[in-house]
Image 1 (tube, rainbow over the protein chains, first blue to last red):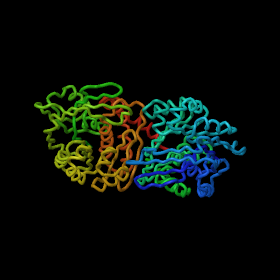
Image 2: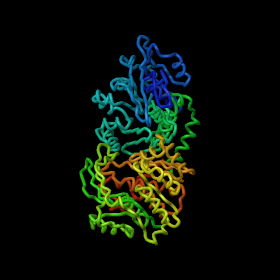
Image 3: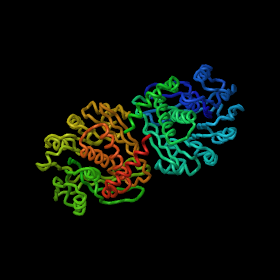
Image 4: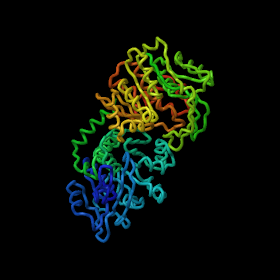
Length: 300
Length: 300
């Protein structure tokens, strides 16, 4: 089944101990798509500006991403993020954010896309996320990501939206902030009580915690020793996770566990190169090989 | 098979968001013993002062710990540690350390104890660790823990000792400091190249990484939502891990994996109470129950 992702397509400038790359193709919807495309057809909903390089549009098309609802606003500039990583590369230091087209973004989708069953609302204004969600006829599974900024500044909107979605995806800091709980298991329980059936807390290199009424599960991160640029790892994770679920359709415990593994493996490739360098070149066989290795690494 | 642990028996004063406890029974050898005793006979090698409460000696005896080589130096005071935890309780803030008897500690063991095959050298001066190790006839398995202080101030002694032991146990900070590598897998490889066949890096609530030539393995932490006092969690982990290996004797991949699980579970009980409150009351059936639950939590 197809999946639809609402998010950003950005131009990223990133500096890590391994170098600096300027104006790379980035953004939550881009990173999500690079992983999800390995499992299913991906429809991308986002906005770009007049300065967005045509080569990146061609690149996304070549990767099979459906761009029907990628709006180009020629009068404004593409959303840009500039950041730096240091030390263990676990935390991004934002140097500059240029919203550009994002500040007037009104997502719209084609009629046919309203029938899509698998939806991922990557991090944008929760009101926009809700607006898009309401355009979908009868979604089967809706995943949601947010960030500190919205948790602080649009908490009411976010809380309302949480009642309408199935899976809330957060990193550890966001989960703590939204729930007011320091302990991540308590945080997951609390967020679950806000609405979502399933809560997924990403702990970066330390893996993920999954919480639902029916079962809880946790996975360590894939222990790569080659972290080059972690930008987009969380969205890549979500892409592998949601993409796999959209392919298998049945939301069983064993499918969810496998989806978490695929998310982990997709994210492990993401961090091994700048931007989408590694994930865009990924093939199903690469995923399969590393997945088998990872399962060995974590199983008795 | 019996296990011998060299380490500290201390009086701890700990303040966490859940309260303050003064003069609790603590120390690396104590915490280690509380977990290891569930699997095998534990011989404790440490020193206490004239002020050490008799009730704690009786308590250790009641728990079945062999105290033949617990020296009491009546002219000096017991080693004391005072610390505080805040926020997510991941990092201890040391408020005060009183070495007391530790500054003149010369570990000595009884002749019969020289035949013990399983040895754990908990964190004390690496020269003392080595001195004790050389008293053992033919150890089968030697585990070693150290800390930032010795890595900085007695690096040469520590490096020499690393060539004589089998398992180096470190937390993430110590592993980074000793290896000069930020990435923990790289750190484990580097430390492995210093001598130990096996390297075990503890990441607190995030679990452990195990590295050896033959296999690598990682485990998330047990996701307890009740962290009261994490003091001694690392030593408790080592006690469960080494204790289990001493019982099963064969150092196979599957035994090591199970040992890591038992270490994890023992540590999860430790953090749920002050000092040895929880671990001292532990029975094998408690371990078995939580182990089964944990295996469900982490397995496909």
